Image 1 (cartoon, rainbow, N blue to C red):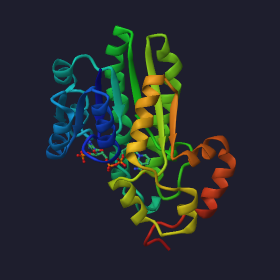
Image 2 (cartoon, helix red, strand yellow):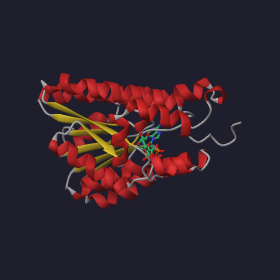
Image 3 (cartoon, rainbow, N blue to C red):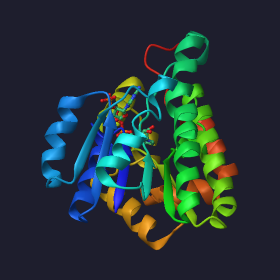
Image 4 (cartoon, rainbow, N blue to C red):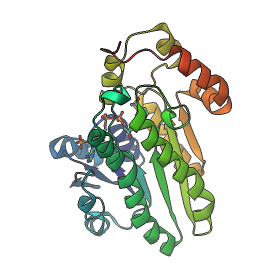
Amino acid sequence: MHVVVTGASSGIGEAICREYFSRNARVTLVARRRELMEALAKEGGGRTHVVTADLSDPAQVTSWVDGAEAANGPIDVLVNNAGVQIIRRYLETPFEDGARLLQVDLLSPLRLSHFVAQRMASRGSGTLVDVTSMAAIAPTPGMSFYNAAKGGLAAISEGLRAELKAHGVHVVTVYPGPVRSPMEAAGRAAIEDSWASRVFAPTGEASVLARLVADAVEAKDARVIYPFLNVFGRHFPALTRVLLDTFTPKVRGSS
Ligand SMILES: NC(=O)c1ccc[n+]([C@@H]2O[C@H](COP(=O)([O-])OP(=O)(O)OC[C@H]3O[C@@H](n4cnc5c(N)ncnc54)[C@H](OP(=O)(O)O)[C@@H]3O)[C@@H](O)[C@H]2O)c1
């Protein structure tokens, strides 16, 4: 099995690579920080391929796919995981920063999936995995552009599942709440500490999420929501909206 993981140099992507190493998959690691990926790839027992690509540049989003397939065979699983986050008040966020986020978190995964799904469909098999966020289900004040990107990715991911089924291609939509990683640490540091964020948004472990993702791919489950408390947000969106609007802590430095 050939699994491609974008954002493989850190956090959740790194954990997903390790999970697939343990399942004896051939793994292609994609991100910008090559040295981190090369160190991680050593754990993959010679079945890895490392790609340095800046996914904010449309020209680099698919240019490496032929090389990866030459090295590891046709892509069986594409994990769209690379992402960036901005936690800042909307009125203080330069629009260009928001547009760059939309490129990495929304347009690039859509472009990559569109390219790879054609090949999967022509073979009649494959799985697309989209790592979105609970921000897609429960948009959070202070994260406007991130909410938009993850909401867009989740929408296409959920809608595509039934459409691609006829072509033998499965889609898994992943909704992480807070999961320990450099992004999560930066996110916690950017907001004021509050009892509400500790109670309503507990932090999960990347290794647990990685196992759930690989299990969902294998079982052809539709989606993964983790930490499990976040299932509440999906089933009770109106109440979740009220809780978020009432209790979301302020972005630091805000009045
Ligand atoms: N951790 C959480 O609490 C949480 C919650 C909800 C959703 N998520 C989502 O989960 C995914 C992984 O997040 P994480 O927490 O693991 O964050 P992370 O530790 O900051 O990792 C982000 C990854 O994305 C890659 N990346 C960022 N910009 C890139 C670019 N321009 N080109 C190529 N790769 C790029 C980074 O690699 P390089 O810097 O080496 O390029 C890194 O490997 C993201 O999509 C995030 O939005 C995370």
